[in-house]
Image (cartoon, rainbow, N blue to C red; front, side, top):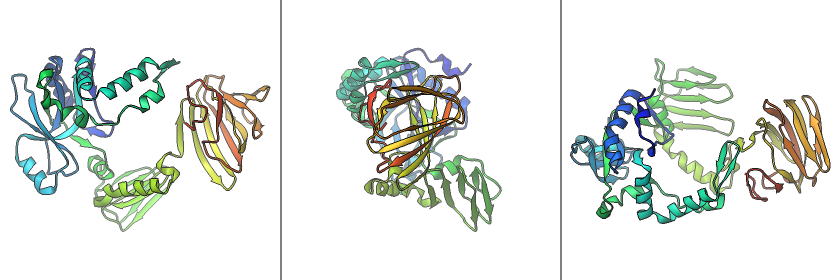
Length: 385
């Protein structure tokens, strides 16, 4: 059993998804050391002992340890320039901000109510008006969307010293566990295993005279010749090629994608839905081909389209299809046609995933050309999600 099983109920251990921790035992030990401060109503964060003057991370300035071994937080510091980062590393009281927090649930509700009441109200309303759907709990979407977007640092931690009346302190537990933030491809290269030439590769990759590079092939062969210190990331959506020391500037590409309203800024080629997934495998003028997978027992909404017709070909599993007043059952290698403007619904009544190929044809093929009449997942009639 993991040592983290010792964490009492109603305590929250909050961690980002984009990080790596090489030494789990050291991480577990740090969490256990943070429990006394959290159990007594404090908010504990884990400050990474800095290995270098890093300008890509925020820092935490902490004071001397108390009797529990926790260091009181003095202040949070934004990402510094190179000179300032060197000064921080030279001091013993500065740590990288890992974004990992340990706190009692009631403590967290108290500080949120004090510093971000709109956030608490929106989340409570979203939960109180949510619905249970099989193995999901779906919060009230419009209430949840209205919740202000803010980080823990900005919403609470930086304001905590201004409210001594709350009796809640912020504390740092030093963390030396091989932590790395995987927020950029450069940091992924740093954390990855490398070959004798310093290359980190995954997928179908061929390298010739290439050094100190990260090459990721998601679905196709990627070949690199005579390159140093580069990042190549190939996915079904797009291909990124950048110098390793400039890869942070990919954010400017994202801004341009959004400015020009490119679909890549909003959706992956493979899109998750409550009932399963679809993958757009080909598209052209007036047609689109999708690979659709429907989970066992899942049901799509009863819907219709104003601008497109659809052909469905079952390649695995069994499909129950409502088409107008008809209800038909299709098995592998069978197909059907959904004319433009006809109400229809797709269901997987079987025990294995249903896989089918959908061929759309029409004057407009956008995902917002959906009119829903019934939906198990509470989506709006005009929603494309």
